[in-house]
Length: 258
Image (tube, rainbow, N blue to C red):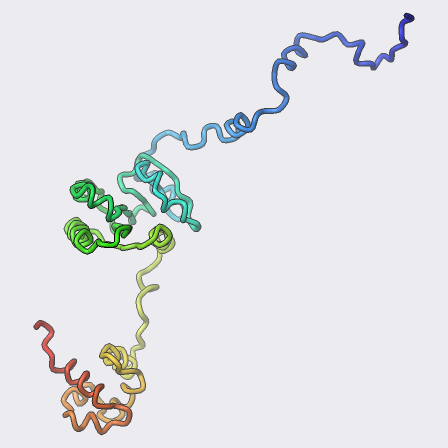
């Protein structure tokens, strides 16, 4: 058979080189696992930092530091507005910043390990805002909640109860969102004038509304006169029925400590 004419660019004329043989041994495309490892190699392997520097790095961001013991907590799957980041250098279960820390307990776990919470809170590093998030996951929880509340108060923690994983996650997100906010943002705004302050005080009496307070103010002129008014005098005010009169008199005359 006669030789077939070949072009100079015909790859069949090429003699495999040493570099080509090495390329042939190396897969052209990485597997999915190898590609993932290649892209994310080194993530989460940063050298340990001092706690002060570590917390400073997340302050002002939406990152919440999570202790490794909480990495399997189902609550993490319900966090949508923050970025959980597992870190073994913190002592709290969750760190929202340099002044806010949260610990987690479930009622079921407390019933199985009654001494766990006390020992855990005793080792806690004190910060300005420290809360205990408790997941109520059993129906008969009254006795256990009393114990948990006592442990929280003794250690200087505020107790937040959650009846679902989603609710517990919202507590963490809210604490993070208000990390650098003033307490005035969640404080009820009360105007400085007399009628606004009188309304703020008297509407704490059950069934007494803003209109009733304005009626009383117009009839008597001052809080002292309202409090010294007789049952008959209060009943003469339009819209103030017998039930409201009794509740006002009870509020004015009942001692603070029974």
